Length: 361
Image 1: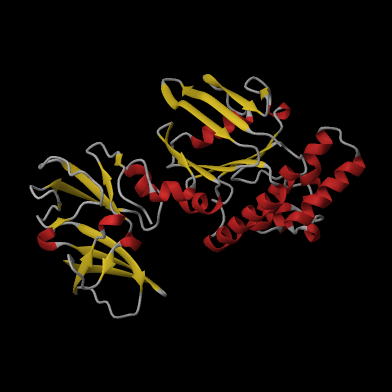
Image 2: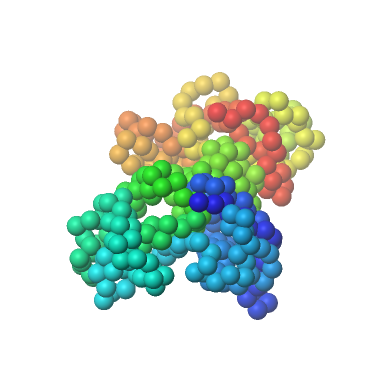
């Protein structure tokens, strides 16, 4: 195994700059997920690491080797694609053995490596089948098995679960996590799905418009987002963001004029300063309490034991989303007391950058 270092990676397609100086270090054995919206450059970056795209500038280091100018076959990587890319005329065994045959590996070694990968993935009974006879999840396991038999230094995954249905994606996330625990191979995984990122990653890198917005553990990014983009990209339902103005009393005045306290240990900005406050839906407290404000229930999404409640402020003011246990008592149109606990508020300046303050749970 080996670590991965990407230094100042830049990529232009004609006049379009897709990667704008991206630098990433992935430690040996780490599972790092690059997440971001479509078109942010994450797949281009992964393909550059694999050697399938030539960088306009920057370096790629695997272990102690500079592989920037090496072909894919000499980089010590194995890549699993969104489309699986299996050979339809070959059996599962031959698909998994293909890379080793091209490398002219010994027949006995090929058989041992294919059998080992099949046992790890639980597909021993599928080795004689053709891809057409497999389900989507089985095909994905075969694609992963083909990568495992090569014993790479780095695994690269490009949105590997996006073609699967919702239930299978959940199960495959568990299998990816179990696979990493078993093999411990350094992994760089690309997805637009923030749930995959949060559940799989040792570390998440949030990419937007070819630049890194923030890097850290899932908990760090969730609890201390660097800006509004990261705050709303991670978390479902996404974080509530409310525009506020600092009042003469040093509190945050909502759009409808009602005021709430700022987070503790914050030096209030000058009166009239415009900021945004953020609060996660699960941190919004519904129920009578000191400092509670009245909101009207506009819509309820009931999901079994949980409810996502969409709230409307007075006179067309701020809207809020609240997530809580559903006992069936809430009704659309009801006026309910709502509290925004100060120690769960996030503050952002006029440019959307986080203002660090207060304790997080």
